[in-house]
Length: 143
Image (cartoon, rainbow, N blue to C red; front, side, top):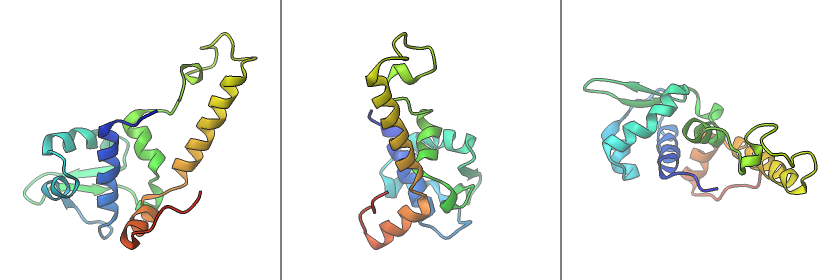
């Protein structure tokens, strides 16, 4: 599984907003400059985050984007799900009954376990934690 470029930029944009003081609206041009993304692409990638209630937008001269929730309540998983949808890893995990071998296939159990671990890891990192690590230029701690 490879996340899309849009999701990568969305994560970077949310991290940029999380590194600002709470309640600050970040100018679109500042996010674009810092994250090296075009204004049109930024607007496109932030739409799912706005719809998910993670990011808010403000129009006008002082318009821009801000976190709709506290950075300590937004996880990497939240942003990935808003951009990509649910994590599946394999077609057999899309829904029950999708694969005729699901009741006895040992590989499906491995996919399920991998998905559960990936979900737990991504859900274990908030943007408050990530922004603090970025400020201190620290590597990620183990989950």
